[in-house]
Length: 205
Image 1 (cartoon, rainbow, N blue to C red):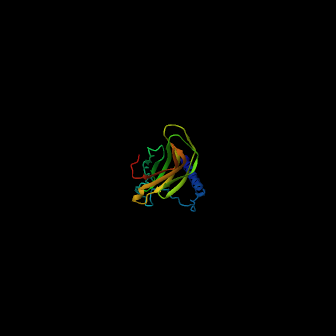
Image 2 (image 1 turned 180 degrees about the vertical axis):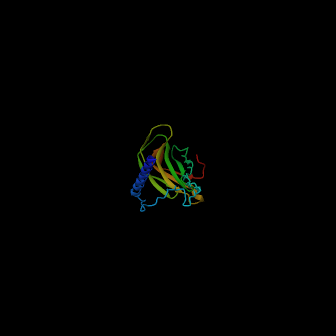
Image 3 (image 1 turned 135 degrees about the horizontal axis):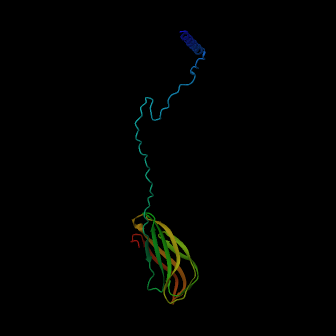
């Protein structure tokens, strides 16, 4: 019985000591009230109401149409000739080419030639060519051709631009002259001349 009383006393002493120790322990540190309240991070796709917005279909980017260069096919050139007199032993001839630049613009190139058998002449600087109202002088080199076969020898080449200004302007009158200044096959010849027309209405060839 005495032992039981001692045991109870020891128990109460230990319990009292434990309560005293708890009462003397330091208080827990209060929460830092100055700290900014934390807000849970929300995904960008979620609105303030917490709803996820429906995806808005994006319109396809307008594609700029490719710029294509319009190229007008170049027309075939028109070619022609003002032939030499086949009965003459020496005469002039003229070949021409008209390249269309537009509906009314042409670039015309002419080649004036001498058609003859053997011929010996020095250079010349007083030949003339005319196309409508346009007139030019030209230079030709020395010619030394000693054969019995008739041949064509180029005297000069000239290129000019021509604009059709009316219905009758599609034919260009042409004239040419070249000074021989001597006797050929027993016939005195001072100047050789040529007249004809460049017709822009003929079929290209």
